[in-house]
Image 1 (cartoon, rainbow, N blue to C red):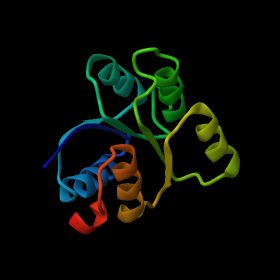
Image 2: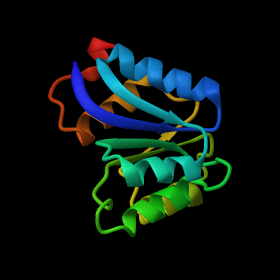
Image 3: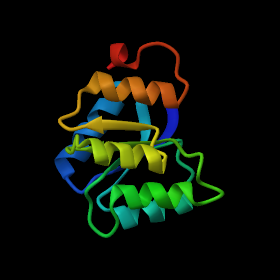
Length: 132
Protein backbone atom coordinates (compact mmCIF):
# COMPACT_ATOMS: atom_id res chain seq x y z
CA UNK A 1 0.00 0.00 0.00
CA UNK A 2 1.16 3.48 -0.77
CA UNK A 3 1.33 5.47 2.47
CA UNK A 4 0.94 8.92 0.99
CA UNK A 5 -1.59 11.37 2.45
CA UNK A 6 -3.75 12.77 -0.35
CA UNK A 7 -6.42 15.46 -0.12
CA UNK A 8 -9.26 15.39 -2.65
CA UNK A 9 -11.16 18.69 -2.88
CA UNK A 10 -14.20 18.86 -5.14
CA UNK A 11 -17.71 20.17 -4.54
CA UNK A 12 -19.26 17.30 -6.50
CA UNK A 13 -19.65 14.05 -4.54
CA UNK A 14 -19.56 12.03 -7.77
CA UNK A 15 -16.16 13.48 -8.72
CA UNK A 16 -14.72 12.90 -5.24
CA UNK A 17 -15.95 9.30 -5.42
CA UNK A 18 -14.41 8.82 -8.86
CA UNK A 19 -11.05 10.27 -7.80
CA UNK A 20 -11.07 8.21 -4.62
CA UNK A 21 -11.92 5.04 -6.55
CA UNK A 22 -9.06 5.59 -9.01
CA UNK A 23 -6.59 6.20 -6.17
CA UNK A 24 -7.80 3.25 -4.06
CA UNK A 25 -7.47 0.90 -7.06
CA UNK A 26 -3.88 2.14 -7.44
CA UNK A 27 -3.18 1.23 -3.80
CA UNK A 28 -3.61 4.51 -1.93
CA UNK A 29 -5.36 4.28 1.43
CA UNK A 30 -4.82 7.59 3.25
CA UNK A 31 -7.34 9.78 1.42
CA UNK A 32 -9.21 12.78 2.80
CA UNK A 33 -12.16 14.40 1.03
CA UNK A 34 -13.57 17.92 1.33
CA UNK A 35 -16.34 19.63 -0.62
CA UNK A 36 -15.20 23.25 -0.78
CA UNK A 37 -12.10 25.41 -1.02
CA UNK A 38 -12.27 26.82 2.51
CA UNK A 39 -12.43 23.31 3.99
CA UNK A 40 -9.52 22.31 1.76
CA UNK A 41 -7.41 25.20 3.06
CA UNK A 42 -8.36 24.40 6.67
CA UNK A 43 -7.32 20.75 6.21
CA UNK A 44 -4.06 21.70 4.45
CA UNK A 45 -3.13 24.03 7.30
CA UNK A 46 -3.72 21.40 10.00
CA UNK A 47 -2.48 18.24 8.21
CA UNK A 48 0.61 17.68 6.09
CA UNK A 49 -0.53 16.21 2.79
CA UNK A 50 1.81 14.64 0.26
CA UNK A 51 -0.51 15.69 -2.57
CA UNK A 52 -3.56 17.90 -3.11
CA UNK A 53 -6.00 17.16 -5.94
CA UNK A 54 -8.34 20.13 -6.24
CA UNK A 55 -11.22 21.18 -8.46
CA UNK A 56 -11.08 24.71 -9.86
CA UNK A 57 -14.74 25.66 -9.42
CA UNK A 58 -15.75 25.28 -5.77
CA UNK A 59 -17.70 27.33 -3.25
CA UNK A 60 -16.11 29.52 -0.55
CA UNK A 61 -12.68 29.43 -2.25
CA UNK A 62 -11.85 28.43 -5.80
CA UNK A 63 -9.14 25.92 -6.58
CA UNK A 64 -6.91 28.70 -7.91
CA UNK A 65 -7.34 30.59 -4.61
CA UNK A 66 -6.40 27.44 -2.68
CA UNK A 67 -3.35 26.97 -4.92
CA UNK A 68 -2.26 30.60 -4.53
CA UNK A 69 -2.68 30.37 -0.74
CA UNK A 70 -0.53 27.23 -0.61
CA UNK A 71 2.18 28.74 -2.80
CA UNK A 72 2.25 31.92 -0.67
CA UNK A 73 2.74 29.97 2.59
CA UNK A 74 6.37 29.31 3.60
CA UNK A 75 5.42 26.00 5.25
CA UNK A 76 3.15 24.71 2.47
CA UNK A 77 4.52 26.03 -0.81
CA UNK A 78 6.23 22.77 -1.80
CA UNK A 79 3.04 20.71 -1.47
CA UNK A 80 2.40 18.97 -4.81
CA UNK A 81 -0.86 20.20 -6.35
CA UNK A 82 -3.00 18.89 -9.21
CA UNK A 83 -5.74 21.14 -10.55
CA UNK A 84 -8.81 19.38 -11.94
CA UNK A 85 -11.24 21.30 -14.14
CA UNK A 86 -13.82 20.87 -16.86
CA UNK A 87 -12.39 24.03 -18.40
CA UNK A 88 -9.68 23.46 -21.00
CA UNK A 89 -9.48 27.17 -21.86
CA UNK A 90 -5.85 28.07 -22.53
CA UNK A 91 -6.03 31.16 -20.31
CA UNK A 92 -7.27 29.13 -17.34
CA UNK A 93 -4.63 26.45 -17.85
CA UNK A 94 -1.92 29.09 -18.14
CA UNK A 95 -3.23 30.87 -15.05
CA UNK A 96 -3.00 27.64 -13.05
CA UNK A 97 0.53 26.98 -14.33
CA UNK A 98 1.62 30.53 -13.50
CA UNK A 99 0.14 30.11 -10.01
CA UNK A 100 2.27 27.03 -9.50
CA UNK A 101 0.15 23.96 -10.17
CA UNK A 102 2.17 20.80 -10.71
CA UNK A 103 -0.44 19.25 -12.98
CA UNK A 104 -3.68 20.13 -14.74
CA UNK A 105 -6.22 17.41 -15.51
CA UNK A 106 -9.26 18.13 -17.65
CA UNK A 107 -12.63 16.54 -16.87
CA UNK A 108 -13.84 14.08 -17.86
CA UNK A 109 -10.55 12.78 -16.60
CA UNK A 110 -8.76 9.69 -17.78
CA UNK A 111 -7.51 7.53 -14.88
CA UNK A 112 -4.20 6.80 -16.65
CA UNK A 113 -3.51 10.51 -17.11
CA UNK A 114 -4.20 11.27 -13.46
CA UNK A 115 -2.13 8.34 -12.19
CA UNK A 116 0.88 9.26 -14.34
CA UNK A 117 0.92 12.74 -12.80
CA UNK A 118 0.40 11.34 -9.29
CA UNK A 119 3.27 8.86 -9.73
CA UNK A 120 5.57 11.61 -11.00
CA UNK A 121 4.75 14.03 -8.18
CA UNK A 122 5.08 11.38 -5.47
CA UNK A 123 8.20 9.85 -7.05
CA UNK A 124 6.61 6.42 -7.36
CA UNK A 125 8.49 4.20 -9.80
CA UNK A 126 6.65 2.08 -12.32
CA UNK A 127 3.20 2.43 -13.82
CA UNK A 128 0.47 3.19 -11.28
CA UNK A 129 -2.13 2.76 -13.98
CA UNK A 130 -1.08 -0.88 -14.37
CA UNK A 131 -1.92 -1.50 -10.71
CA UNK A 132 -5.33 0.14 -10.91
